[in-house]
Image (cartoon, rainbow, N blue to C red):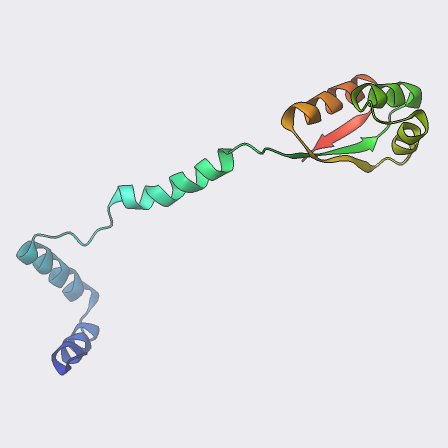
Length: 127
């Protein structure tokens, strides 16, 4: 920085708050500018953050929290949705609650699994 700028900064540092306010007004009038922050610029980061929060997830984790009172119905419900499971595998999963049933399920698959198990009395959590 030039010595002029350094000297000017030192003089500004020595001003009182009222003198700084007067200086700000004088600079705004002399150059036709505003020292206040535009509200649209302040709102833009907040709007971007809220848009990111409302963005819907594409993959869900399905967790069986509790198999419920009727384990047989929960086993049947699980096998109805996950047709690749055999009876023994489905029974092991139901008896191992709490357990993650699906790691990266689509929204439709996760909801179908949740609805079927909850109808059988199980407790399921999507995340």
